[in-house]
Length: 184
Image 1 (cartoon, rainbow, N blue to C red):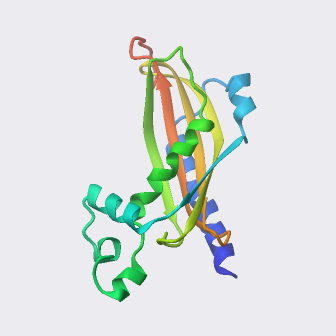
Image 2 (tube, rainbow, N blue to C red):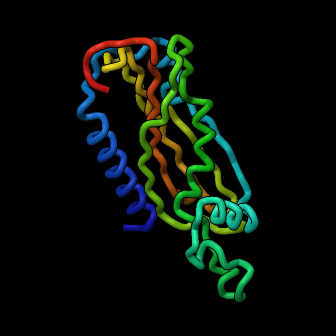
């Protein structure tokens, strides 16, 4: 089995785990609208060249202290082995804006969960392409009234075409003015 095949199997297992654990308690009480279905499978992309300064700035901003994330100013070995902190993948999630459906009838849009799987490090000089896809839309009645739960998947690949990370993101839309019954 190649490393890529192993990465794909791990990704599939992780996606099944988050979908099962987070959505298992949320049996659908409604269906997605036509607009939601029209966006299913639609993809948006973002490509970014990774610079040393950007990684160091992110590490400082997030309080990262590990030398593999912060010591590019140090020895030659440290410069050659600098990697992005594991949470750096969150900077690519803006690409989901192109796949999540806006629901103006709700006044609250809440980022409620992430599941990240990192397969290989992101390094200075890499060119990373983030591809986002809407993977699930469920309408249900929650404790705050009607709720729409959207899930999107972001896959990050490097310049060699290898998957370096996947991020599954869950967003909920609801009204803070509504009251209902059920569970969120």
